Image (cartoon, rainbow, N blue to C red; front, side, top):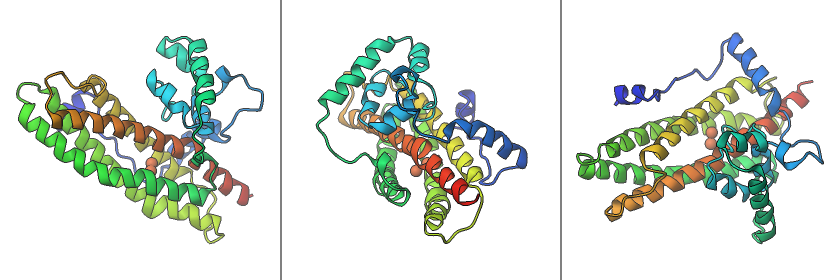
Length: 274
Ligand SMILES: [Fe+2]
Ligand SMILES: [Fe+2]
């Protein structure tokens, strides 16, 4: 499996939870555009970042997903740049976003507006909870589908291998967030923690999100965008549907952390340590 994954450049590049001074300096430089979530009022839609557009209204993620615009790991790109890179009409995307606004009757609270401690609870309950129930189920299904159909269709064996890498990466990633980073943020909001920066651990989490993002892209390629062939059996179909849902939930989850929670926590720490 390792050689298969390294062939596709997918080997995990582990980084330690704390950084060397040089890495930290590079990270702080790279994070300078994450300090504020939103562009100034009046900024044209096309000049705003796709990350902030989804932070403002999560329903927009459906529009971006429909044209495969990545709003989590590549969320710092302007809508104009994201459309240019995909070769799609910016005006068409703007129209879709505007019609999403008109159609939207769902008044469910936007988690991006929650205070830090409630946002952390939301992420752990909704998104980590989803992964903890889905990963074992998808593991069993992908193992079975690879075993039964892998000989005729070897890409299903790689689907299982890539899935296992995602599962392994996310299991240790969630543990770091739940046992170290998130409690540190909560203690800071309560005035019980004293440190001047969370940049190192946050850099690590963003790096791991990117690793998972690359693995998800590979899964999408291997599964023809999660489309089963006509002759596929029910487990095969359920697996592909489940992998599609996994991608959708992870995109929302990573987006909330990268674009909303992490910049808010960094701003809180920077504000109180001055
Ligand atoms: Fe998370
Ligand atoms: Fe995360």
